Image 1 (cartoon, rainbow over the protein chains, first blue to last red):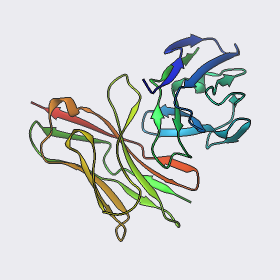
Image 2: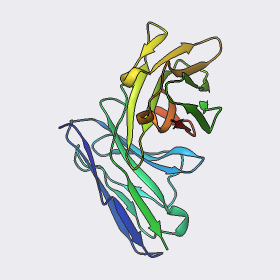
Image 3: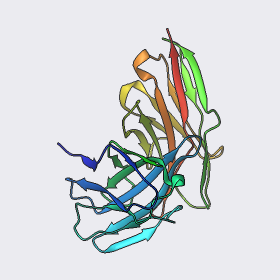
Image 4: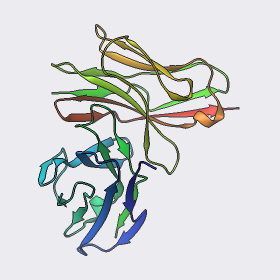
Length: 113
Length: 111
């Protein structure tokens, strides 16, 4: 089944403790992206990647890092999480820069206390 | 710069009634337009998309949308809603590797 898999689904952590949210797709998509969803703000792009070793900032990249060492994986790293990063995070992939529509993961609900 | 405006944050409607969810966009270049649906505790699913051609686009679950270039709108419609359509709906605009989502419209269906 074609899908984007995110882990974990739920995560509660403390301020400053480094964490990684994993994202993997099995569709050989070139384009991958991370979004955060907050009430009333819709989805805001954090980082995206056009292909292996090619990443770029989205609209809200501060406090996040990404890497794209393999085509299928695109982890999101929070080096020192803060409470304002409490949010619902989605990974998405697309055949080519989103033109044909994204496939989204099921989401990761992160709480930073 | 692109922007997307979903004019209604919430739309309540009775079951079997018609519904329209409004979306307006602004862009200085040609765009592609999308509607996504998010059911409770799930990720977003693509409902329909406009890339080119006919301005009336049909999607899954009986939804359709009409691209109106002069009014820069892409409103989503369904002639008769069902309880299972309860979800949040997002309009999105893409061009030149940039995709922007609207803030979402929560559709609630009353029996």
